[in-house]
Amino acid sequence: MIKKVIISACLLMSFVSFAQQGTASPYSFYGIGEARFKGTLEYRSMAGVAVEQDSIHLNIENPASYSNLVYTTFTVGGTFATSNLKTSSQSEKAQRTTFDYLAIGIPMGKLGASFGLIPVSSVGYKILNDNTGTEGATSAQLDGKGGVNKVYLGLSYKIMQNWNVGADVQYNFGKITTTSIEAVTGVQNITTEENTSELSGASFSIGTMYQRKLYKKVNLFTSLSYAFSSTLNSDNTRTITVSGDPDPYTYAPNSQELKLPSKLSISAGIGESRKWLIGTSAVFQGEGQYTNYYNQSPNVQYEKYSKYAIGGYFIPNYASFTNYFSRITYRAGLKYEKIGLIVNNESIKDVGMTLGAGFPITGSFSNVNLGVEFGKRGTVSSDLVQENYVNFSVSFSFNDRWFVKSKFN
Image 1 (tube, one colour):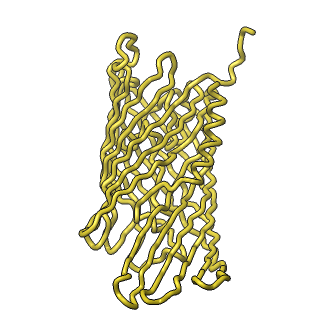
Image 2 (image 1 turned 90 degrees about the horizontal axis):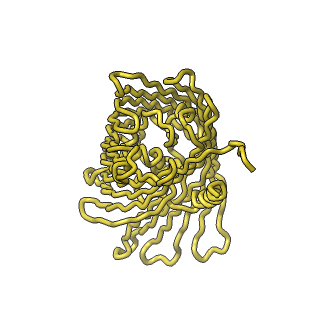
Image 3 (image 1 turned 45 degrees about the vertical axis):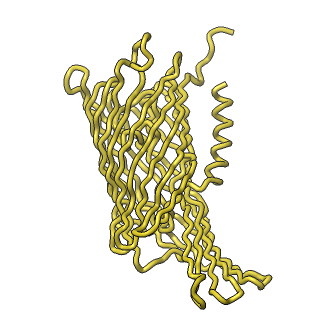
């Protein structure tokens, strides 16, 4: 039954990943959009601290984790995002419901494998410059949608009981469409310009995880992963339409190569497995080359990305038979990010807090996870937009034994 559910979910989520508009941020205008993937919800609820060698939760952020799995694991997650966008003089509210990830992990002795579908970035904005009250002035409306997704396949090997290595290969693909509508007050004709970019490219990452006993049941956990720089090929098309003209003008301005920079992730933590953990992580990413022909701006530069986080979990008593609440996993974390974008000489930052809980499904190793994230991105200084957001997330992690031959008919 669970296999039928997984196949149906894979087909549904594959469609949803193309159809959804995953952000309402005006900062998604730049580059390839707002970065989407922040890990599975179990680790996202700890601000992204994914350091423990977990046997029932799939860690997609480090490919070395797959050989830790004991059961075949299917996980899927989504988010309801709300945000308040404000400038020094105005404010607007926005809401989005998005698919976050779908992945399967398969244990094979000392080997482990995983594959899945993940949205990487999203473009989703509507910007209006209304000057209709001034004769001869130009009014403009800018709309953007789309983004980049990836499918991945990874393998992990357990060198020793406490040391794993692994690697992922990803295929990135997507489509970004932007529309600009301009009208001059007092002039009948309206000009519409639509730009479409078809994006594709491969990438590769490696990782390792190591743990050792510190004192009695307390262990030290470490994690290191590295994503190599890669290229996204962008095939561009521009269509210009003038109202009253039945024949739109379509041409391909150019094909460009966008550079995805390398990324280094380092994490460390201490804790007692299935009881508690506290850890910290740091992520460093090089300066990307994301500028395409349609979103160039003299007041925008790209810089190195960095993120610092601290987080952990607590389980009162995972083996309790009499108190369900003692088996719930309680999670929390704090994060600070420089998202790699400079607008009007302001480095855009994202600061947030995460909370979450994992609810075990009685009679199995499966679980349902809930999480909430509070944060602030950007600033009202320098004529910019500040986003105050609250994200509510849910995920399901189903664990079962596959490929086991029945001993009885």
